[in-house]
Image (cartoon, rainbow, N blue to C red; front, side, top):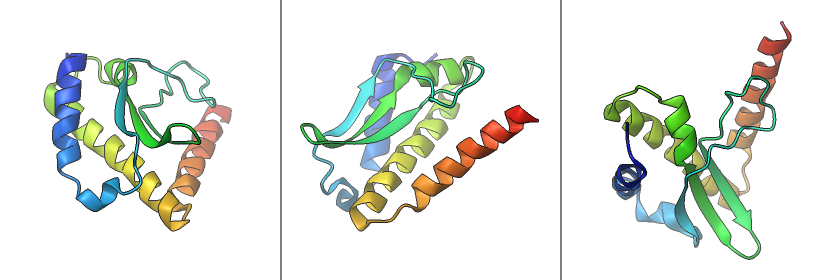
Amino acid sequence: MVTIDRFEEILETLAEELPAAFYEQLNGGILVDPGHPLHPADRHGDLYIMGEYRTDPAMGQYIVMFYGSFRRVLRGADESEWVDEMRDVLRHEFRHHIEGMAGVRDLEIWDEEQIAAYRAEDDE
């Protein structure tokens, strides 16, 4: 299992892969939260939020990566699987940030479609 300290180390390395321009207006940076929040659409106790892009009047714009969610979802996975998933989630959240600056909602719409598909599967 990847410890929270190792999670932070991996995250730092993954963050360094991204161009400096991606960090424009991301004044709150990237934070690690030990929690494991469930998505509001969750129906079975397994739809964890892995990361979030947040805009807050007081805190500014920042990304939160939920270590506890990764722990639950990647239980039994090796470190390379953690790295792959962390990279995917981090880049997903950065895309929200970049699209937000550009006034584009494509990824938000895609996320909404994924939740609609999740709900539809459960309704079948």
